[in-house]
Amino acid sequence: MSAKSDLFTRLQYLNAAVNLPTLIDNGINITEHNGVANLLRKGLGIVAFNILEDFIKDKSLESLNTLSNSGLAFDNLTSFLQDSAIIGALNALAFRSNMLKKESSDWRTLIQEETLKIHSTSREMYEISKYSLVYAGSNISANEIADLLKAFGMSGGWGLMKEVSDGIGGGLPDLAQAYKNAASRRHNAAHTASFQYDYVWIANIKNEILTIAAALDILLTARCRQVNSNLIKKIEEHDIRSALNYRFLEPKNTTYRETTSIGGRSKKNWPSLQNAITTIKPNLVTRNEFLIILDSSRRIEDWFV
Image 1 (cartoon, one colour):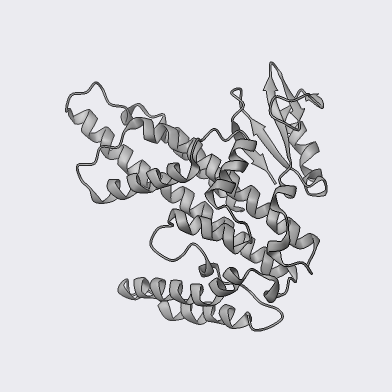
Image 2 (tube, helix red, strand yellow):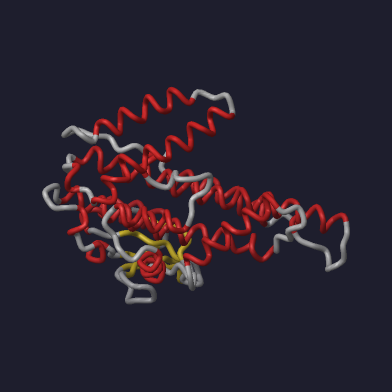
């Protein structure tokens, strides 16, 4: 399964859980029901953040594998990624192996397998270790996500992700702050017994996860497309914004309007969403586009790369 398909399966379960009546307080009084509801919200908040972290790790690995298999020379990677593939991976492996050792797990095999990948960076055919990026600690920091984009030669970090979000109907005013808030709540839910996890936070977190994941997926996929189109060019020499082209399917009455801008002129009206996706999706790479599915509020609810 892909990073995105795993994400959507988990978001389906998350959405069903969020709508359970047991998560909603009955009034403002201190009652057994409200106490249980808060415990459940805290647990769900932790899981929700882990869902996003897992997607980031999985998408990072997919993208690193694309680079490894592309035939792009190691020297044509960004200096940051070259360093990350060596010293970054070593540091992350030291951290992970210490954790495994404390758990009496097999840390030796991890080191042996991943150091072979680190060594491969000295050869023409290389494989970048997944531990090169977003594995520095127990959780992924906001800075690590900016560094992930930097490793792929994209400057701007969260600001660039906000540009993508605005272009696809993400609807979040500040992606970085949304991520930091979710991380902080996850930490407090896990480590502070008295922490009150507001239902509004858990009700909104699916859309926050969806928007952040979509922006990251589109950016990394766009960069990998550019790499595969020109193996001579250094990765940072590509203009990422030239690869950010969108096609939208927007519901109207009983049809879906196909447009190239949100609310723009319809290219075609489709009676079936699935037929539209099936027809449009195979041409996305050749058109250098991404397909965005909007809801009735013109907010992203799905995307295809």
